Amino acid sequence: MSAPRAERILLLRAGTRVALPLRARSLLWSVLLLMALLVAAAATLSLGKLGIPLAELPAALLEPPRGAAGFTLGTLRGPRLVVALGVGAALGISGALFQTVTRNPLGSPDVIGLGAGAGAGVALTGVAWPGVIPTPVGALLGATLAITVVYLATGRGFSSPTRIIIAGIGVAAMASAVTQYVVTITLRDEAAQLAGYLAGSINASSWGSAGLILLVLAVTWPAAAALTPRLNLMELGDSLAQSLGGRTRSTRTLAIIIAVIAAAGAVTVSGPIAFIALTAPQIARRLVRSPGVSLGLSALIGALIMVLADLIAQQAGWAKGLPVGVITAGVGGIYLGYLLLREWRKGLL
Image (cartoon, rainbow, N blue to C red; front, side, top):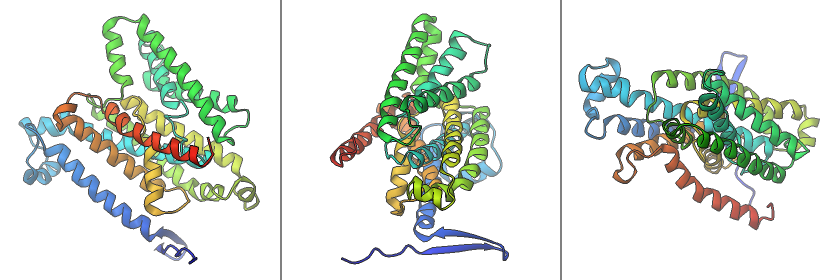
């Protein structure tokens, strides 16, 4: 049997003291994903009756036009595209962190009840008790409470993947029950608005939403990147990582805090978008064929999935008007079934 080929590492130097290692395969896929994102973004802005012609798009981006093209770029599709990019990247980062610290491919904000908890927080603060607590704070509080209950319910923190999934299913069910209760007791119109939010939609995105998700990324992406070397050590197991100075307990806590903030930021501007946090890190790992955390690739893949799903929601006749979360849930459900079957065959479930 031949030994696996060592992955080529490139060093990006800044002066004599700073050297950033880059995996050649990761760099290649990053470039390809950026190109795919560029194509998907151009299609989002140019397709359809209200789209800006592709030949005029570069000039329109440099100097925003007036009239119908200006409305499309500045109000209708521009903020929606930025929100799709930001939400997908934030969910990709959050999923990569969760799957690394739990050492479980099924670990994600969707599976362990974080999205459902954030949705319940929005339901309580936005509909049941409007004006008491701002809605974004309600989403963050709901997500934090959900992950805290999962942590306590496992009895071992986040060291047992099976317990995390079981506790997460229970927490998600309880959070969904709270949301359904709020929907039931509120007026019909308010409940309809809430139902649209809980399906995961970016149809009414504004530049305020775009600014919020970009701010969340500006905080969480660098923080997660700084934590990556310690997260890679944890891939060796807690005992060995601890002996090598990995500080596993504090690393796991910091990673979960960053993941919760990223996921809560995404949920705040778009509602719970299903399965992106689960699938993006999985695809990234298969592309680079590396056991370490692929933070940047996970963010790019998450952004690409989100933009493509929104493009389908805007342009495909059968999907027009659907919340983007319905489309990601349809595709992601198939992928989750594949993962569950694979884990069952390995005897891990």
